[in-house]
Image (cartoon, rainbow, N blue to C red):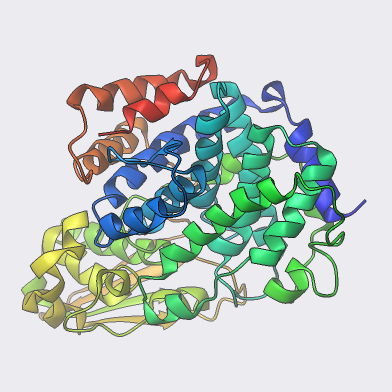
Length: 452
């Protein structure tokens, strides 16, 4: 059986009762978290223009854009909501796979749910779970460093699985949909290297492509059969070195959504060890930014590759979110990291950049090309005092999960950054609906609460 066939069988055959309680609970947590970061992302620069472009892709007002009064064709809504989810680097991820699967899976699944409906909360939970399974499995199969932007490429196949399940595609049609997704899959690491604002657009393009793939899959034709394992299939072209067999055997037995990590800070996940260490040391040491002589973050090579870039005096927000020196400087200045540190005059604050010049990121020689931890933060003060903090796993990973209070604080903070004012009562109502999602008969009860 081909990999596409095994993925399709898992996506279609899974049932709500197959999911252990931990997977259901995590799915509900990350669905609400995703709504929050997507709402906050609606107010990022270029959002109005992107909504205008997506509106020209069709004249049907099928699905809602989160944090706005706008309705778009389903593919356009999936595109915009996926962009909003990932444009602040605040969305959840599977660390081992290095995949932000929810950023494409949830917008795609909800866009088609709004057009097809009624889709129950149980159906949405299962669709999200199988989509995250497939995206994370593709990331975990890789045994070499990323050449392509895995949240976009692997995430797109997860979006196909989730949307295809919601649409009711059969086994053969979903296999065809994976083939059509391969024909559209895109997203390189170049925007990440440059800190370009096109990076979240790659996630959005693959979410939109997933809906197109599912539509094309209704055609009675035979596309590529060996979508993933063929000599020119996804794994050979996008990952180069891989081993997927044991991971396929875990489908239906190990639910990856339970392994996802929150993001407690609105910056690249690779920066989170540095941010936490800096804030902990400042709190415990009681020093001021002016007391700092030098800060060093020792971390796996992937961290240096992803966020060890030099600080710039006037960075673009997308660059700053992926710059360890910048975010650590902000955390040391303010004792926390917030959305506002990537907007307006905060980006050019001279005090930030003077402090960032004292922050460096060094490789610890870890041989794992996908490792994000451990990380060590060392601060040397002008009086000679040396302070050190170390983490084996980062804050909000499965071994150190956010508690409910922190999870809801993040969601409520995100709510304040909607592009258009949202009804105040909707915030707490949405929390309540997410908590009882498995009892909801139609997920449009959720999406109505996301609209201005």
